[in-house]
Image (cartoon, rainbow, N blue to C red; front, side):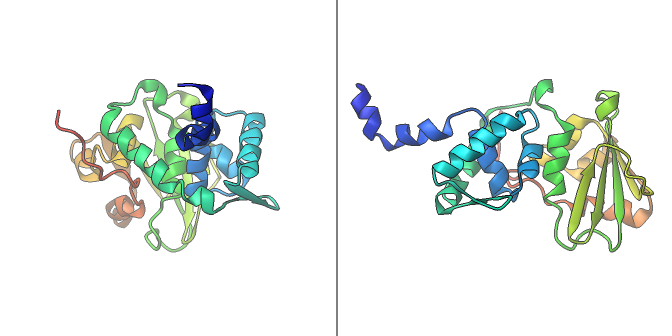
Length: 222
């Protein structure tokens, strides 16, 4: 087919904007609630700040985003990409198969968990959850999630507060829980995950996190 066909094909025109590397991941971050530059960057940590700024500006010029002071806000056109991104997530869970070791990133996992804390689920006051991943490099083994009702902050350095509860597990196992491949109950029963702390916190911690939206997607047989 000639070039003239692609000039009038809506799929081709859409892909001119969306098929550049990182673009749909940036849109996913914005759909997940990120609005500020540093929030978006936390969701795409392998992307350079310069390239992220360039992609955000492209999306603004294309009418997918509005920039309001230091916030990036999806327009109606951007919001219409939600089912596209959700469908890609469902397809990926169903058909991509097991993640490779290079895909396992504690920061990305915990950032996703941080912004999916179930409303009203965490205890009153400040709660500090220490995540300990013995199977990853020492510099990324420990992470602290500091929560209060309505707020959550992820730290890769000790924030200096007393730890309320500790979760010790392999990174792949916690990703499996988040993706819906493994349940909290099974992980605890088979001892691939341990929760240490006061009994009320140990018992309720699994209920503090709403699983990823695609966690309930049925997998193909075999």
